[in-house]
Image (cartoon, rainbow, N blue to C red; front, side):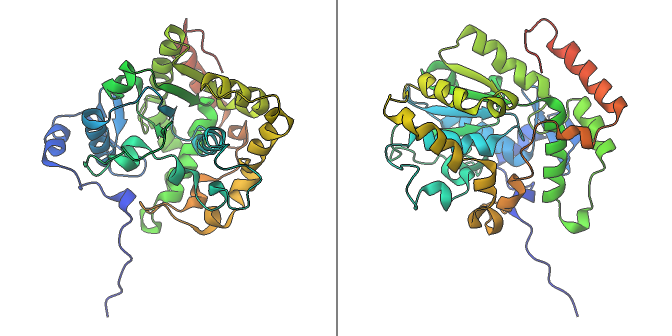
Length: 328
């Protein structure tokens, strides 16, 4: 008697793309992926087929508004946390943090702040975003060179978050292993470390992604707020205030009495990771919400990387970031 297998989750599907995308994929450089079989190099960065489908549609159809706010991150750099913080910050008059029915208590942050190329445009369709309240809050992993032209040309604000490459690597390795089905086995740390060092990772090369936004933030600091996960962890209240100023919604003297602490509390790792929705829920694409919460700590790489790995990664970053003024 045959045993039935559960359907493959959407995030593992590789072939659901348009003919236009298929034609492009056929001429792009490829490498084996960490989770899916194939990564494709588009505009200098590695993406899966479905992500590329989303990127192409987004580039073609997304019309940025001057009031839009776009959170840009390298994968596994604190995206879930900062999505929650920006949602709570921007919507603080509509949803006070003291409300027992605050949306963050019953929704994963990825449902409240949608990815352009990973949710809104991933199926190759052009969604109607006209009914969204202003300011519209979106997220993306796209490198600067791949952003829709309307984002680059408008006055919309970009908040860019990146993380120490050693912690980013460990988090990405652990995350992709969580998403692999049992029959797929797990990736060894040595195998994916080689890929990461070659620049082959989701939306990598990691350092090129960072440098693209870093250089643009230096040219246009009014448009791009460049932030590291480590800075945010060390002084969350300071950077929350700075973000509010940058986004044009500074805290009033009355709000300062408790609003900053209330936002940081409802968005904390302990609060979010212990909510029922994040322990038991799933995203429409099939990922379990709990996969997005590991430990949220700085320096966890020390528990996994060998001395040789650390030296190699530090040397690569030193070479890549040399003269940029960007350091970790």
